[in-house]
Length: 308
Ligand SMILES: Nc1nc2c(ncn2[C@@H]2O[C@H](COP(=O)(O)OP(=O)(O)OP(=O)(O)O)[C@@H](O)[C@H]2O)c(=O)[nH]1
Image (cartoon, rainbow, N blue to C red; front, side, top):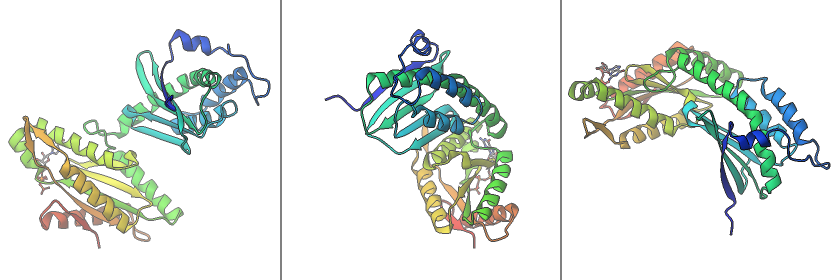
């Protein structure tokens, strides 16, 4: 029996795609639009945004005029991008996208019915419309990320944190939804530097950031707040749910293996959590999380403390 999942590599520069890309497949009369028409319309539409989410949302919507789909997912690890549209389906066709040797992500089309050869040909042809819009969006994202990211850990920097926190507070008020924050600090981090050197300390910082991100759905909400301190914004999350996330992060960072000079070292973290109060400012929310973190440190570290 044939597996319902099929995987392909798409090199935007390959001769095959260029050939497919210029409407060589005959348009079917009963279809709502021809391949050539759709390619032309989509090329214009997709150029109108630099937001990967919007570009792929439009692509997902428009492509269904020719090939019915249940879902589309896109992953680009280097940009921390994971996007999903629609529901899931049993059958899938995957494409690895690249341009001039540069990896541009993985795209998966899903639905409950098998894809026939003609449909796969159409999908491959339509994928070429994504090349320049997605390349520009990824370059733009990389440029904005470098201004707003901490280069060591890839987490958001303080500028990004301040912007995002204020936006999340405004959203939380507008939609009457809870908002919580976690302040996470590595325990006795000075010892790592003192005993194993600054390089080993840097490695631990990277590993902790990766471990936090791996636990969270929205990796754009992790910020390096201070030297060995991270701030995690939990939108639409109340006190109890935030406590669960905090505890999960504490356990996850503790169960990672950290090496310094080839030697296994034990690392734990302490966390302080606060939940936005009516009318509260960003400064006050941060201060309460910081005070809770101080309590967690004072009470023995490797624990989570909740702000009152
Ligand atoms: N390797 C490395 N170390 C850093 C960086 N930023 C800050 N640090 C170090 O982080 C350490 C923080 O130490 P302290 O604030 O005394 O806290 P701690 O040793 O973690 O102890 P507790 O927080 O009380 O558990 C200092 O030694 C800083 O030099 C960095 O980017 N890389």
